[in-house]
Image 1 (cartoon, rainbow, N blue to C red):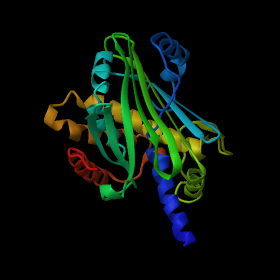
Image 2: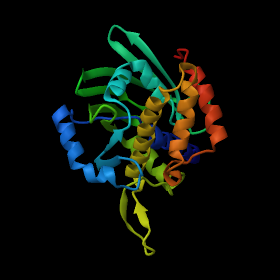
Image 3: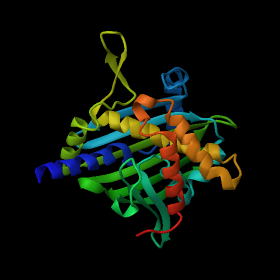
Image 4: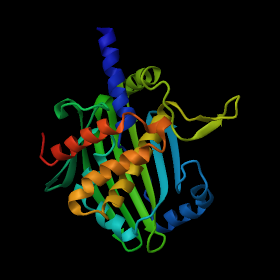
Length: 296
């Protein structure tokens, strides 16, 4: 009985480690975000990611937080126009391999995203964990954009999930974006995460370099902060892949997003590889089709 319980916690923690699309941050503003771009200019220009990207992570007690700062090769007007529409968020959130379902539902109180997250392989949507994100547009002016997703409760005692995207234009073709996320967890979540990190997640790492080994090779962030960094990268790549797909004819965009996201993750195989291309593509084609209908 105890072994079955711990096995269940381990599977659940794996879901949290790779799928907690939760974000919360102090509000940016246009001036503050431009100042951050200036502060990070050298890191954006030269880093191991081979793209203008900086990932930061932090843990404070039972709260995890991650931040991604990136220069996107997409006009600010495109990002602002697309990400202020809640339905488009589902086309983004479905790309990471463990998101099983996302559907936007409008009501008197605004729009909610009905999300299911699960194991990395295909599974019935009814067996996946539920998350309900409320969408709120904060700002959409010619020089600043911000939108937020929030879920008060998550699986296995997790809570207070937030996704915050803010952005400013750099020029006619480039945008500086800040993706911030955070979530809290209680006793059950802590036990589940510890079980995951001691088993399936024991060898997984993030992107921050914490030192060098005896051979001079980089030692990467592990543990819960490593998990946060992996998740941050997945969601940043999902946003970039979504924006890239807009150049394709409408009927080809879903396939373009799926292929683009997998290609992008393969640039970081140690951190992000979870399955081969045929498995991922077949799974996502089915899930993209499934999310067109509302599932309670």
